[in-house]
Image (cartoon, rainbow, N blue to C red; front, side, top):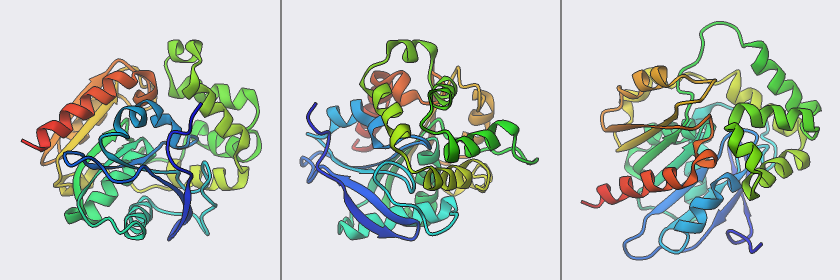
Length: 278
């Protein structure tokens, strides 16, 4: 299959050297859209959206530290530092106009942190299945296992299939498809030490975002999955109500809506972007 985007360039940031793919200038009516994926996945979870958007918008696709072709972060990192790194990527590309930041799970946290740190550089935010809430007690056994497994058994089918079961609907898994192949290939090829460090930073050590959501002034589309077993819709909806300019949508998906129902996600974002221009 032809490459989705031009080859990645490495950009030095505060969270390490990030792999960045740039589709090039957008059409006159297009936007610059920055994509940051979830943990345990690379930019290819956005394959359907990239195929639709790359001829209309400028697509900047980033692999998070320890993921895809990005290097390991020099140390554990915060979500705020990821937002700073996103700003450094834009600086390296000399992008000065406000951008639309689209993030899934981890990526949604990065999008929110970027919007808080750089309000003038943020045209809009799309937070897909984003864990803005965090349990106040100690990390769950499940989270600890995901971190441990990312280090030692990330390439094994038992781990890959277990993560897939938590991330996707059963019908998505049964259907297989190119995005599922991308997902499993990414985990098989990952650097366990780098992957585990990143997953720990996101799952266990992150600061909650919910109590700061009222500081995100840009128009924000927040999408939750009705069948997401990790982050209940009601809790996410309650948190999203703090957004000054927010719009909340629920899809019949699990945790990674962009893979479970790519057409619906693309349509929601397209409509959201159209409203921005009115």
